[in-house]
Length: 94
Image 1 (cartoon, rainbow, N blue to C red):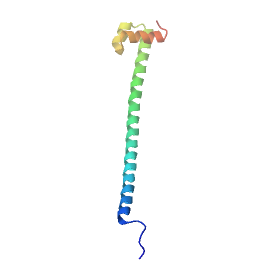
Image 2 (image 1 turned 30 degrees about the vertical axis):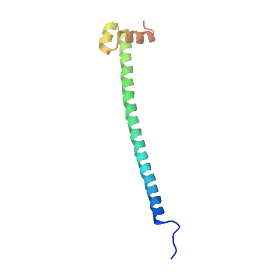
Image 3 (image 1 turned 180 degrees about the vertical axis):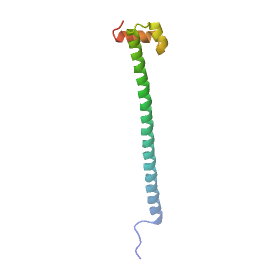
Image 4 (image 1 turned 90 degrees about the horizontal axis):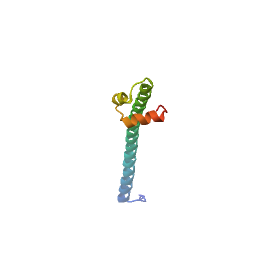
């Protein structure tokens, strides 16, 4: 009867090592998927916030062009007086 090159203890350690590698790969794969999903959600939220801000800036510009006072624009957009003034200056409107 031929004896294997490794003892039972060595084979057990070898199996344990590969089980650890397999577990770690599964964990990393799950972590990657979770991180990717989280990043995607964050990107969507940031995009929506930026989109809403751009829309509010357009409201400032269009309202001012329509003759609405800065004070009223501040009330409508909830931007500060300084923010509205800065937007209008950036557009060359004041």
